[in-house]
Length: 322
Ligand code: SAM
Ligand code: SF4
Image (cartoon, rainbow, N blue to C red):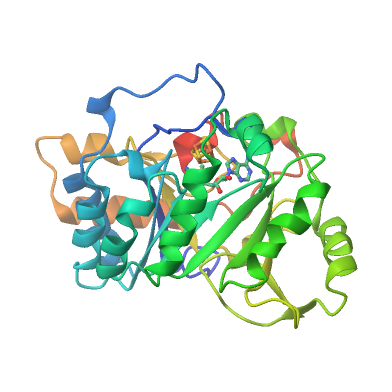
């Protein structure tokens, strides 16, 4: 459906858990308070919301977290979502650690894509960023995903001082059909203290290695990435610069936290509590569709990342799902 600013909202991100098997320092601080299990939506509840979303023209779903693969039954849930009439696309964002043993099952379910988050290709550096010595497992996840034929992308957050990591990460696109996307840190939660290089700085570094790197007009995902190609690269380089280059007029999405809070915009703490509605005695699917419709209609015009004082979101990215 269209929101009040005429934007077509056809994409929703489902954060299915706030748990994670890593502690990326910009996302999930040590000692972060975790939600009670009974406050998490069940898969049945997610599917009811998916059904309501489809009725409003939302056809594309991202499964995220926390780390979605730590929640038991994630692949079965994906299977049920894929089988729902009206669902056109289901993709997954994961840190890749638990991906290897699941990749062929996910491919058999015709999962439409996997984004693997990786901020450094150096195992020691990886451990320093994430708190865990699991680089090898992520590589196994990446290779298994490619071997299973899943459309695979790497997401790399542009942390302060990360310039030396850019080339080694971009090289994953050299001989593999992998898009490597560099993402500006958003000032949410711990991210507020982690602002790193912007698009121009990244392009400067990459062009030293691939001077013919040039922008291409290609739609390769649901997001606002600008893609670049070079003769020496099999995959594309993507840049997602939500902070320095606002793209709110093209925003196509809403987000659902694992506790059932529907977030019309990443920047603001406000959300619509779907869990209470789902668990009330007199709830029906029409009411759910109505509440979802109102929530989409209420989506703000733009984020406020350029005015940090106006950011009202207090949750960590691991609670929201990125
Ligand atoms: N655990 C999964 C993963 O790491 O892909 C899914 C959840 S994670 C919150 C989703 C994405 O959000 C990851 O790519 C992560 O790097 C990114 N992220 C976390 N905090 C961020 C921030 N402040 N700014 C930009 N991206 C962030
Ligand atoms: Fe976990 Fe993903 Fe956040 Fe890292 S970015 S702590 S893997 S949720």
